[in-house]
Length: 177
Image 1 (tube, helix red, strand yellow):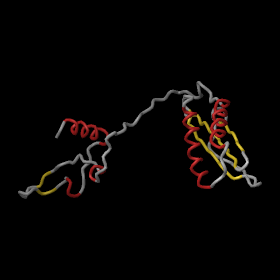
Image 2 (cartoon, rainbow, N blue to C red):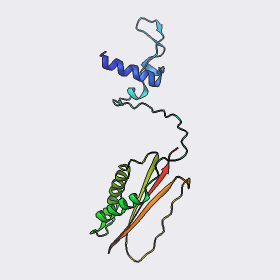
Image 3 (cartoon, rainbow, N blue to C red):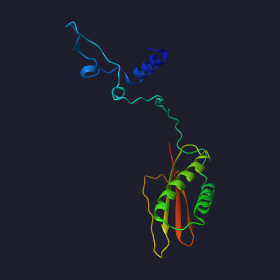
Image 4 (cartoon, rainbow, N blue to C red):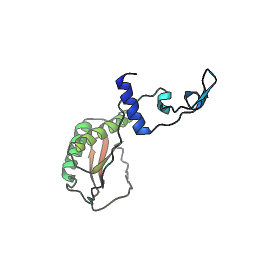
């Protein structure tokens, strides 16, 4: 067995512990000479099925910081400017189509989330919602519910309208203690 496979096997044993396998992969069985032997297999269930995780992630254990509030507040005006810029640039000259709006909603969400993450605001979880609809004289109400801390959690929203469609984007910033 090469050194790389030994290192991988040892890391897996540390992470998951040795687990006796069942069936014909180890455990108590008979050798060809008729004697029984005790063995413990270190093969995990995922390895038996052929699933290999070459880039195994180590679990991150975070220590308590006892920080009950943010050092840096969520910048609502900057996020509103991002929403305005993205919605205007993506929807300004577009006409409403059903398939297009489904794809564009996902694209706009990803762009907004990436630009808000670039602001590097620590300890906030970001949730982005985008709605695109056709303008045909109807009305619409959008509501959302969640567990909310009014002193630390916040949101920014912007709505855009052209001749054939409307777009509403909302970014929720939930403080992570």
